[in-house]
Image (cartoon, rainbow, N blue to C red; front, side):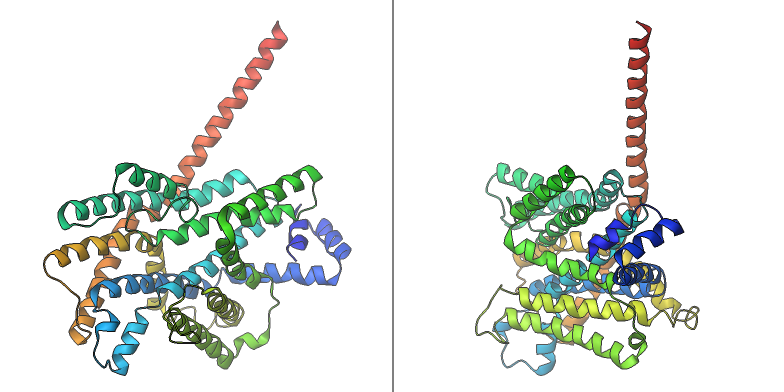
Length: 435
């Protein structure tokens, strides 16, 4: 299907557009229009809901890692009530939330790639600058924060991760180049870095596959095919499987619109399906549903989460379009809150665990063994979540929100370098001609 979209990339001029569409038939026309329709709707009210999902997913990841350190282990509880069971289950939604990130990433990155190719504006330089600036502006400070927090915890609170400096440096550099879970482990205490490695290689693999499908010279096709196979071999089976979940986000852009998306029952059902899938995952993971023991073989349930979320996003894209005019001036608080939380969600994801780990080892050295689940401990959890969000917000003001500034600076440097390079070539040619 994507080959069709990619072939329609040479211009938006009406004449050439219809020539391409007519040559490919009615199915091509529908597919092309599906993408244009979804792309335009993503500029509307649905973006608020997607921001909310992104921010909520980051908070749920924080809750899982915080809950595992804050509360007593579930196995130590004596006859827990239903409410306590629900509390522990709610604190186990971090894993499913990473799948939410994958689908949202697939949606936005594939949209950006496809749109640039359709508009005949594709450039590896621009794409890599956009993606790498987005990642590194947060990743580098987060790695440094992890290094400092882990060193302090090791020196003062008996935390141990690396037995020697060589391993420490190797894993720092490996994570800097997204080689975690390929050649090195996650750096230090920062376990959430695993998914960033997945994301980076999906960023690289997707445009390679798309460009492979274009009508172009055979030598380029061979080069892209070789590169794609090399990346797939490098990242391994598990990461390649999860790329299918990432692609669910792209699939949403290609599906035809339907009037049924406006039905409130269908919208509610799709939301409940996502909730069901997300709550099923920790139950399966801990051997309490479908399996009799703990398992990390979770691809099927993760794929189910991805599909159900893809359905919900599809419903939101096409179902909220009609609400735009009616609700434009309503729910301003929800809109502002969603945008605010989304603005520091990446920072929150990358810095929360080393901070939690540092505080946990400090507390453990002073006799902390975990809190009994009750109203007071839940309030403490809420306060810590609010504090972590505040820290992430302040961190993001000097990192995440500066992405466009860093991006523009890098592009200016590259343009200046290119200008000087071209100028040098011209001067050499003139000198050769004058001899």
